[in-house]
Structures are given as C-alpha cells and as structure tokens.
Image (cartoon, rainbow, N blue to C red; front, top):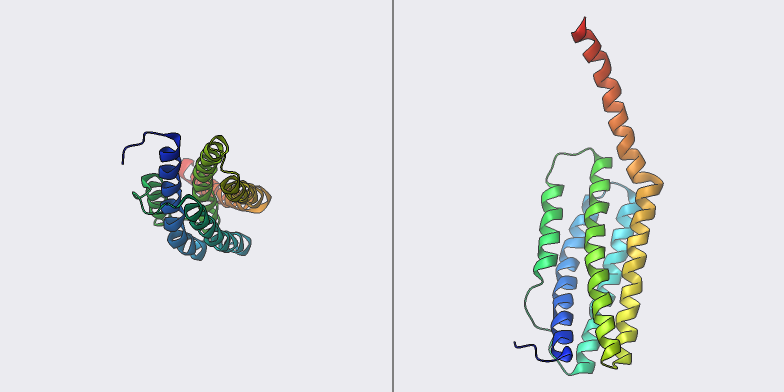
Length: 181
C-alpha cells in the first residue's frame, strides 16, 4: 500500500496496533500463568480484559473510518513477545521471574504508549475527534498499566528478587572462606 497522505499513514498505524493488540491477547494469558506473585498475575489478567476492550475500540475506529483492520503483522510486538517467551524459558528463581515478567511487560507497554500517542496525534490533526476519544482512552489505560507494573515492582517484586540475591551471596561467603584456609 502506498502511503500518500497522513490519513493513509494513520490507517496503516492503526492496523499495526490492531495486529499488536491481537498478538498480545494470545501472549498475555500465557505470561500471566507464569507469574508467581498473585498481585502481578491479577494485574496481568486485568490488563488482558482491558486489552480485549481496546481491540473493540480499534474495531470501532475502523468502522468509523470505513476501513478494514487487516494489514501486515506487527513485527515490533512479535519481537517483544518472542523476547519475553525466551526470557521465561530461563531457569530463574520465582521472584526473579516475576521481576523479568514486569520488565518484559513494561517494554510492551512503552511500545503501546508510543504507538497510541502517535495515532492520537494523527487523529487530532485529521480532525477525527471520535477516534481521538477512543484512542485517548486506550492511551490512558496503557499509561496506567505501566504505572501499575512499576508500583508492583517497586513495592515488592524487585525487593524480593534482590533478597534472593543477598541470601545467595550469604550462602557463598562461608564456602569461599573455607576454600581460602
């Protein structure tokens, strides 16, 4: 598809987001199952429900535009999901795994925040106020999800992962002293 106008680019970016959100729907359920923290699992499951609503909003935007949502696969989301899946295959302490899940999910949230920010700007320039309202609502939700993940990480998960590291160092110290005798 040749992109001759901002409207063409807007639709292309919306299609990319539509692909991204649908890929995320499949991946987020699996990631939530991997979380060992109940608070984290619950936050991911809540965001999964929210993502379903976000896809419905994108459907509404496409309907308003009279355009199809079908387009190329979002390679950025595919890569972010693949990176997360590879990370979760690693042998990790459960607290470290939860910290890794938060980091991977925040990368995804930041991608979505950037993408929704872009289409909101285009919607505003194109005078598509109804679209802007729908997309702005999703942008706000993505920012809130990112903040929620930060709160979870900073209030417990990262500390628990760090405590495991301190315990490991304490266990290694006596063994090192024995070897040096």
